[in-house]
Amino acid sequence: MIHNIRYRIFVYADEDEEKLINALHNLLPTAEVNREIAEGFDEKPITILSGRIDKNRDIKNFVEKLTNTPQFDKNSFIDNLSRKMDDNGNLFLRFSKEYAYEDELKIIDSGDSIHLKLKIAAFPAKKKIAIDVIKNNL
Image (tube, rainbow, N blue to C red):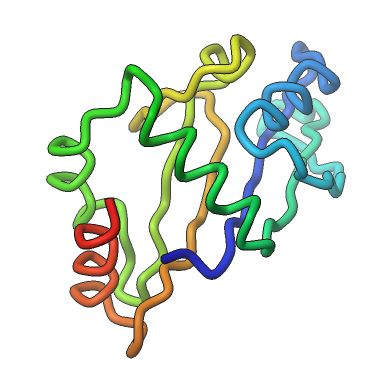
């Protein structure tokens, strides 16, 4: 159902990078982290943690964890697919950092979050087809 998962976290100057890496590993245990330093609007450094998961086993484990978490509402998730997906079948999800610290998954729409981009296995890679793939596999 998913080809790969790309992830990105912005670590601000007042945040603990190791704590955020642990939160990421609560979502994606095998995630290897790449670091990039950028400058924020206030000229304070921001560390960007990013990477990609390609292994089917790791992707399957993530999907199982997501769909089995108490906060997961399948109907709401499906209802929101259209606005969280681009025309090329990429699904964009944001997870609360605070919940991830506690090894919980909570999808949020805004705020400080862990950003995931899921490339849905749809052929051709179109939004409608990708949405159907997700609906048929949840």
